[in-house]
Image (cartoon, rainbow, N blue to C red):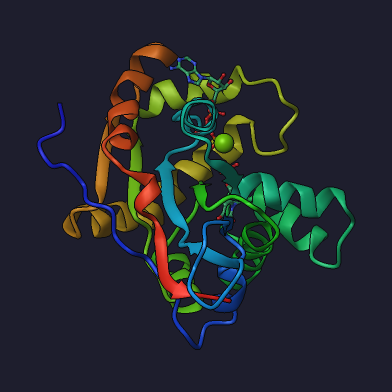
Length: 244
Ligand SMILES: Nc1ncnc2c1ncn2[C@@H]1O[C@H](COP(=O)(O)OP(=O)(O)OP(=O)(O)O)[C@@H](O)[C@H]1O
Ligand SMILES: O=c1ccn([C@@H]2O[C@H](COP(=O)(O)O)[C@@H](O)[C@H]2O)c(=O)[nH]1
Ligand SMILES: [Mg+2]
């Protein structure tokens, strides 16, 4: 049982943020066909503010696996920062080689680049609930996200898993990832401890962190995850702004 029941924050992007107007593409259309004085029929567009969950944890801690279950149960859109970067490599984009070398070294891609990819996905989505998996990786990532989006995540999941278990899982993953080898894993673990754990602690201090024991079967772990979302009333995620 969780001791703290999280409340739904009315997260709104900063007004001077480049994403602000587009953020309101997270919308649902409601047609009110009942009679309204002086207007035969009025259509209101009400916007839903994005609900953002950061999903953190070391390499192989099970972030992607648990995200799939959250998607199935709560209708989130899953944005894995690592997948978005790998897609950039595969598309032979101008940044592809730099991203590939960074991933091979287990280092962190410049914040602006990763955020641009995340932002593009969010803006082109009809959904308003997002799991951002494997980001922010560092305090620099976190601060850049908050500055660009003008917003903080609604909540943060942290999958806490011992290193030996993470190494075992990554080495058994067999998805052909260039960073799933023992040399890169050691580097990723060092980067995780040095740069990602401070982000975890930041959200712990802010009271936004849900620490999940990442050891056990997928279903046992998901039993801890489910209540985090079932306490939220997503239907309350409306903007007060009426757009038209
Ligand atoms: N609870 C579990 N028990 C055993 N194996 C698991 C468990 N959860 C996930 N796995 C397996 O471990 C591997 C890593 O899981 P997953 O890809 O979800 O981790 P991740 O945190 O997203 O890792 P990365 O940060 O490297 O992307 C996968 O092969 C997955 O099937
Ligand atoms: O925000 C991010 C996310 C990922 N990276 C790089 O990608 C790899 C793989 O990420 P996974 O989350 O394990 O799929 C990671 O080791 C980093 O090199 C990043 O730079 N920034
Ligand atoms: Mg993953």
